[in-house]
Length: 186
Figure 1 (cartoon, one colour):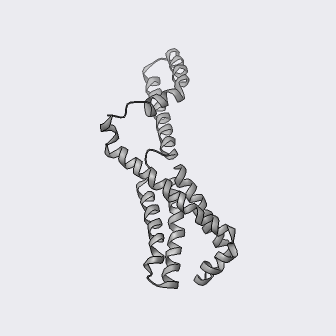
Figure 2 (spheres, one colour):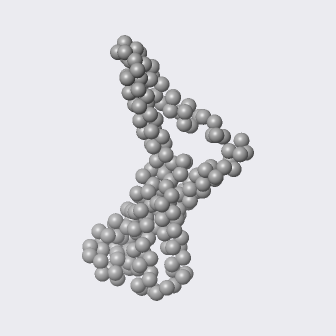
Figure 3 (cartoon, rainbow, N blue to C red):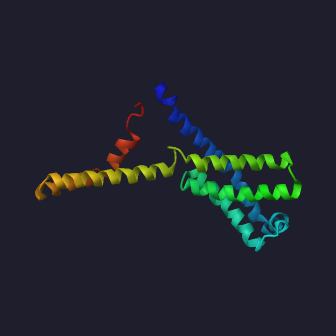
């Protein structure tokens, strides 16, 4: 049991879960602050960069922070959410550099968000995510199809229908037993 807890994979996956949830949780309020006064945000942050359609881009920034944060928290389409955050934070870093120069007090939080989101985008969500569950389900379905095709080549038609019926009955229970309820010590 202790060896399972101290393995690198478990530690890495737990660290990614903590990084995802905390980054998403502390960043999500920035998106809601933008939505609360979108005109003010556009005037203060988008128009000084002389970007076209400042209100529209302000909404994109707000929704990418809110949506990206939720995707990080849930671990669903995690890399897409992390990339949305990286894009928004990159523009924020550029804005900070253009308007204030290299002011470490202004940049430090932005750089931490950037580093966290970039790390998640590069490494992935880890095992404790909805993405991983989806991948395991798809992988088990693919494996089941491969097994069924090999059975088809080895058996005659009468035996094949009984094998298909027994394979389909297991479904979610076989997946849970094989992937989530099995011993993780190996």
